[in-house]
Length: 399
Image (cartoon, rainbow, N blue to C red; front, side, top):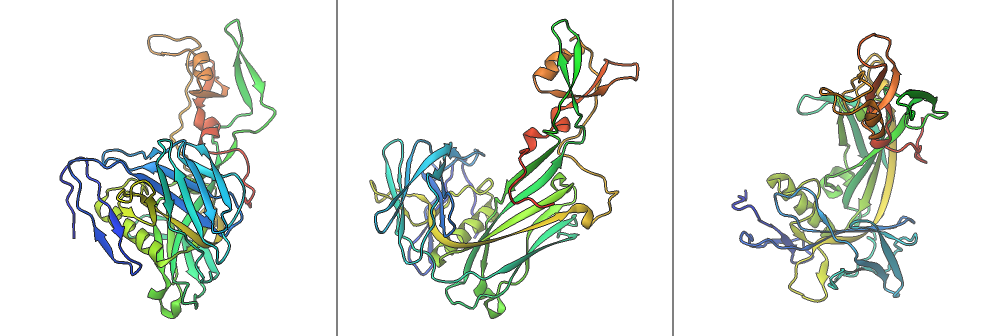
């Protein structure tokens, strides 16, 4: 049934009512806005620094989630062992030590906000099913809209365990960036108003590595497929016009074995976010999961604390493996060389020195054309790629 947004501030949320996956809608709140805690928490069987994200529900007109800061976050196992978390950036909490979920042990999430409000999750264990292997491969193609590009395909290899039915997928993309106008010299202003060309003695900013994360909910129920095996499906499509494809590209796909309750939660969230466009990116705001307020049982808490088994794989490819080398190389912005005057004027708001020191442009070459100033400069992101990615080569990167 299609829902209509009748006022500017509407929060729609649902709640689980039983383990059989039945979902009941709450009444629309159109006169007031409910400021609720939103929790994104996933404990895996990987030995790593685990993370929890906290934010507040947002009004429909807002596009950026409001982080819940200065909270005390813990995960506690059934033996009362406590794993402390610390806030590394607003609303993002990382465990102080590496740890992982173990079979047959219950884990609970504990949150105390800066306002003193206390929240917890229902004790949760790892799913007893087993994860199977899967394959990833890339190929070129055309999507349903007629756009040419690259598909990353997932193909499961079979799930015979009756407890291995419900899966959620996330991905992390990493791509190589080469600044098209990188130059081995800097232009340094002198105290007398002149400039000196100075060798860099390094190539920092010539090559960088950008990254991105999935902001969609990808779910599969292996019970929907023959032999309980997830059939091949495209997990991501990247248009040929996307500059991320220009050089080398990698995708890491993470497969999570989740509970039926978690599957219903994410499926409901996915259905409403896609059909009503109520959410920007993947801001959870309509579904109540397995979290509750310890202070007020009637308070709604948005989110789901899941304890999952996980398996991941990575694929690499170069664009010229699938398209000709003469394919036009695209970049993240349109680059334009200019030859500004040394001094500011009525038609040039900033002097060349101000342009350089403010980070608007970087030096590219001397100007021998006879018009304009003595130097050619380019927008900073075209000359160095620091702001588009990191210069550190990722540990997993392969050429």
